[in-house]
Image (cartoon, rainbow, N blue to C red; front, side):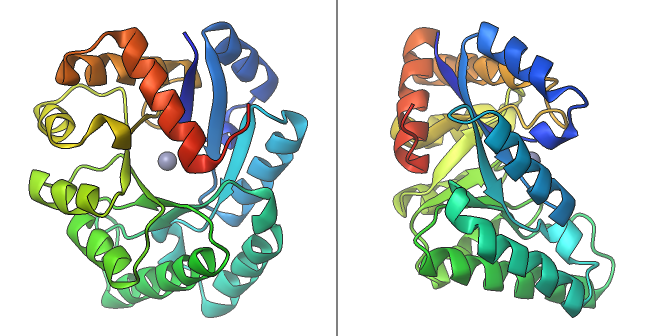
Length: 245
Ligand SMILES: [Zn+2]
């Protein structure tokens, strides 16, 4: 069993070395550790240099963070991203989140920070890891309007119609280990070559090892064995993030 956790937050684990040792012993061969704040971005890079060829960093300012940053604060976090992007497998998680904002200015800041980071990633030909809570349609349309191609929609929970639109554009989807009717419907809609497994630990699942449980959901939805679901999603992740393991 050699699975990949395509979306995790290793910076949130107090003892990263033991989390990684436990993940490896469960068959996890790589983790994409995603930033969201400036501090998390720094930690993701530091963790990836301590655990090369296993923890791969992706850095970005998440919309729920960007919505409360002043232009100066955003710029300094963004400058850090720009100068460290060459060490990363993707830019993210970035996007739109309409769950938290209560003011229009916050939504405006989400859009402007998303646009800046998205354009930078396109210019550098880096893949994008997208957060789109309660803003799935807007995020997908924004990406399509900018002709983004190398996109993974993390924890996508939009409608099957938006999923189809994104899949037609070749966007990938990470599957969390969360069983629900919505997830089942989405999994039946999205082709296997666009699916990845994620834990989103410690926020959604407990550890990176839980990404393997997402393969069970994919196997059930696609009528294939868990082994095959693991094999195909790991191949998809290697190709998408350009991992040479
Ligand atoms: Zn996340």
